[in-house]
Length: 166
Image 1 (cartoon, one colour):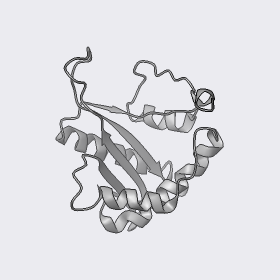
Image 2: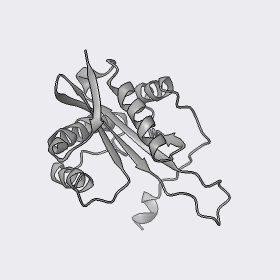
Image 3: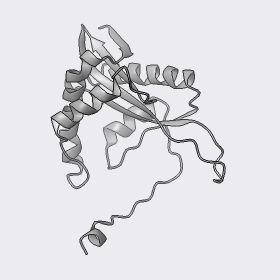
Image 4: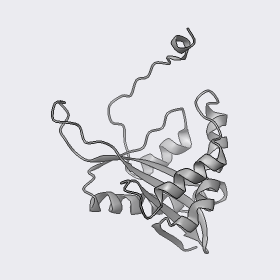
């Protein structure tokens, strides 16, 4: 099986929408309080804007194809460099968000996307990639760990919804 990875184009938008929506259901099963199925039209507009010729966003969207069909995507989303007044050493970092269609997991599609994202990040001077996994998701932890990602600090959160209802 041959996997090819390339930068997404505007004509990939329907496939990107399909991938985003397909990714929602397994996440909802993991944590229905945190995840939802986004509106397909809003997702379409997001990707059309992101991939428009006028877009100045630094986000990179990669797609993986198998026999000409898009079966995976990865978004490389640069984060702001810490400002001079903070104690963090200024360096360019980015989040990665990877989606592979269910029938193509375990075939190397995700690994090919991450490898391409690492090259794209290096070309942009990005030194660190983050893969946020916000709910117990052992398959995602295994996947990113196998790609060389490891723990970095601790992210703590506090649900403020009760205060919002007051």
